[in-house]
Image (tube, rainbow, N blue to C red):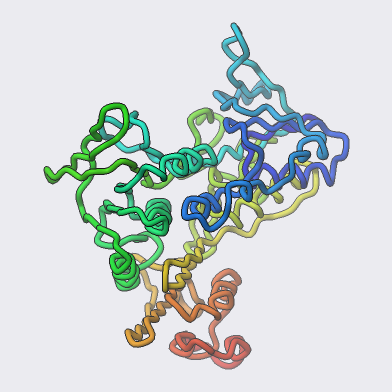
Length: 419
């Protein structure tokens, strides 16, 4: 059996390990555009802020490929898939335009690419995305001479970049489209609490403005905004989110929407072709609709399940759940499931905010089950709430009781339904 894996991240790594456990003799090839061995992508922001050194990034030792008898094809981005003839194309060597790699079973775990920004001058030095090991090494090299940094995007990527640079003692200006950061993860109340904490530590926030052009003589020196203002910056980070890496996927043979559509075995419409990780689309447990939850624990689970199914052991994936845990200065933030339900839904929302303790809790109920939560500080019971969402457990105590920092978890599953 010839297994081919596109990608070199945690989904690919877990898939390869699952395959090798079940099939000791099959040939495994891994193709990836990065030449760096498998590493912990979420830790990039921690490297930027100085919390961990770059040599902590790898998640497997240097003998990973040899130990699992994997043929690595690194530094080459897949350019196409011939579904009928079971081939994947990659750039060739020397005069060869491209090389074809044959497969019996294929896993597409190509991850996601940074969402580009439409502005002049993005080719200047010291303008970075924050997605790869190479990106963070470039940022680290620019830090000693950086005094003013500009960060584009108030989502998770931009937010972590701004926080990391603030921790380095650099003056940071953050451009966000909405009125507060992390708008996809928290609501306005929590977002304003986070924003106040960042401003208290020196963050300059500009709402609604976008970069039209970067200026500089070889290296970025300024940014010209849509409102006519000019911001000095000797470093810029583009953190406008990510998009699933789908450019090489033939849409006539493999269904795509938000990502590559898969079934409960992580298999696409094309038999023997699977997808996992940031590129895969399956049912979101809370939303009960197809979604791409590009988070580390789901990539681990999807990769492992895809690998097992590729090697002939049927295992079903139950679905994904969005969740995040973040710490910024004096705030611990935890979110999961549906945090901002549409107004036209039947969801019920309850909140509690305590300015004196600087705490906030928001719970979203759908029928008799918990569908979403957001917490700032006192997040010890957050894991229990996530479990209630993931298992769609009927709530058998008044929903308001779950707002208490120390609710009785045993009572949740006993008694009449209140939510």
